[in-house]
Structure formats: structure tokens, C-alpha cells
Length: 335
Ligand SMILES: [Zn+2]
Image (cartoon, rainbow, N blue to C red):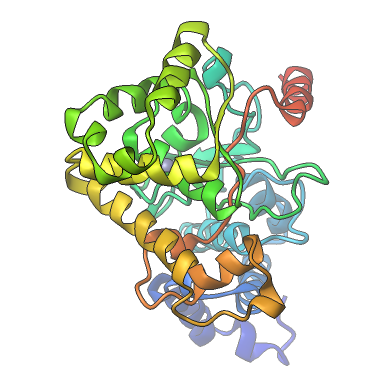
């Protein structure tokens, strides 16, 4: 509680300022030191209203964690939204996030068990597909990757329900394109399951793709057969080499793709072109020619896209995954 010396922090004036500050602030533009500072102030405000229940623990559980230690920017922002809502309606304790008993697809389209799922408090966009999320929609986060796989990967933020559970079982063209992008950013071959191969196979079947410059220069006939085999055999992973991945994207563009998918495809091809041309003059002696170089080119692009704003590469999962089995065991144990 305030003892007088803390009037500035806990007085009515700064209390309003605190809430108003969060309410009007674009949290996405803020980074860790500032976010952490705001969270500490908010927790102190809540504690000034009431000591129990322990606000640290309630806020941690609302974002699906045991404690508020070492939060990344995504969790700090969500914790601030939880606190903000609680400070506005002090009698409504934040609901804990769900951490087990998830309804997931089975088979080759299955994704790992998420860390948690909760209802969104504010309008936001998905941290992977950038779809709009409305208050009340389910959002969640994936679990951190086990070492050493987490090496070059960047943790995804809060994802929409589709990206958490369904993007590999009922993939949209958008999901497929985003998957290509992150594999190419990671300088790896592109790995697709049977569902994704099926979608791509249909998409490429358009006559315009087969008569495209890209296809003529680097024929995809054998690649398309591999996609059909993946579907017929319900394969968990089929890999397409990096240059083939680029050819596929160019052929899809020529296939007369329209609307948001066409824009996303153009964005990805723009980033691929920049990786080739290095228009910002990223220093190869410092960043090499691999993932670090591509990340730099992406960050410094003069034509930002949601992809360059989210960064990466993200680990978008391939099956089967040992960490998934561990998470499954944890899920079973807690459920
Ligand atoms: Zn999404």
C-alpha cells in the first residue's frame, strides 16, 4: 500500500493515467524494458487495491504460465491487457487460460499441444497468418521448442484458433504460402504433409501454371507426381528442395491466383527477390548468406509486409515430433 512517499505512483491521478495510458497505447509498438515497466506498475496498482488474490499469480495463470518471470514481448503485452481489464473491473478476476484437454485433429495434420488457449480481450491480428482476431475469439501460444531445435527459430506470438489447431489438417492457400515463406527464410527445403500436398496439387493443376515461364524453365512434372503420392499414401512429410519451392511459387503466381492469396504470394516473391539481389546492401562478411543474412534483408526491406513485421523463421511443425509426444504425455497427465 501507499505510505505517502508513493503518492505519485498510487495516487488517483496516476491511477487514471495508468489505465488511460494502457488503453490508448499501441502495445505492439513497445518492447521489453518498457512493457516490463508498465506491467510492474500495473501489478503495484492492483496490489494497492487489494493484496489478495496475488495479482502476479492471477495474471500469470490468465496467460497460461505459472509465474511472470522472463516473459517475452508477446506475453508481456497479453499480461498487460489482462491487468488493464482487471483494473477497469476490479471485482472481475481474470480467468485462467486453458492448458490441457484440447480438441485436436489426429494423423498427419496434427499440430503439437499448445501451451495455453484463452479468449482475446482486444482486437488484434494472428501472430502467424495475420488474420483479424476479435475480442472473445480463442487465441493461444505454442510451447517453446526444445534445444537444439530452437537454434535459429523465432517464437511465434499469440495465434488464431485455425493456426493453433487446424492449419495442417484443413490448410488454406494462405497457410501453404506462409509455410513456404518460413522454410525459405530458414534456407531449408519445404516440408509438406499429405493435406498440404493435396491442396498444392490442385492449385498447380491450373493450366496456366504448367505453361508458365517458371515451369518451362524448371519443370515440375515429377514434383507434382510426388505430391500425388503423398496424398495417396497419406504421408506426414514430403520435402521439396529450395529452388523447386521458388519455382512452385512463381508457377502459382502465373496460375492466376487472385485476391489476398495473390497479394501474399507477391509479398513472398518480393522478399525472395530481395534475398537474391540484396538491395539494402547487407554485409555478407558479417551475416553470411544463410538465415542471418535473410533475416537482415527482411528486417531492412524498404517495402515492409506483415511477414517482415512478424519476422522469423518460425518453426511450423513437421510430423512426427518428439516434443509433441512429450507435450502429449504432459497433456494426458494434467487432463
Ligand atoms: Zn492465424
